[in-house]
Length: 405
Image (cartoon, rainbow, N blue to C red; front, side, top):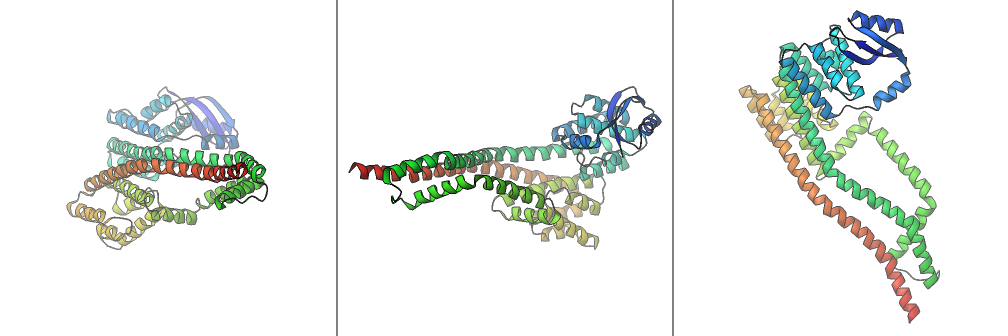
């Protein structure tokens, strides 16, 4: 079905733009008019081009936080939802996000609930976000729910930024090391090999590490194209595989088994589970629905399966805290705290404390890991350079001494 870009003046006099799927231009114009809008321009766009454009634009977490907080403030101040969304669309610099907000506003004016309108954009609003909005609409506490959501998105953003910052230095050093290795193998080692042959002749006896380096250099020179093609093919196949359900589960299982990284991933998942589950429970969402939604938000398929198994046991009448205590990747303290929350009726408050605790632990582990990784990477790079220097300079010095004697 064709898509149309439009510019309109809404019922409250605000200009907005976006995309609309419709059988024809006339139907698109009629659809906009039926919502009380005055179309300024409606043009058909190339579907393939539009698909590329939309997929190449992302909504940053920071933008989502600002949108959520501002919408919460407007609703709390008594501003009608369509007017608030129209104002936010006008203020948003991200063109894609502007189109998303305009589309949501158009659905709202047509009588669609806010949660259902947001659910049409899963790449912007997660299932957790949508379910909390739905609970807020049902309970008449949308402004409070939006404040909780903004806090939750900020926490997720902070953790991701912390991880990215910690990984930036090792990634740079590793990249430099790989580039330096191939540069030395392709451009420098052949010249060194020529010098060694000129000094000692083709039959010169070299140390084993020197022979390994020269053989590696010769192999890389002859097969560099195949090495690059093979590397790209393996990378592409791996990325395709981990996008499948089976591949993603195995990859996440492998990550959880890594010595240090596995613990960090598990703690991040636990913190995310605790905060999300607490927010959903505090919003009035049922336990089973909260477990189902939260399991999809933890970011790890193995832990997601654990939570779904827990949900099934709870559905059969088992206590939630006891089931969490038995889950392999959940520390006993989480189950114990959950049991206390069940007894006192304060699950959301207790789990927020659990989330704060594990988020602080993640921060501490990442900071210590970053301080350890930096010298380790420097040692690895130094060892590589030293090995290359020893394999080159040792034979040259020995052959020069023999020639001099």
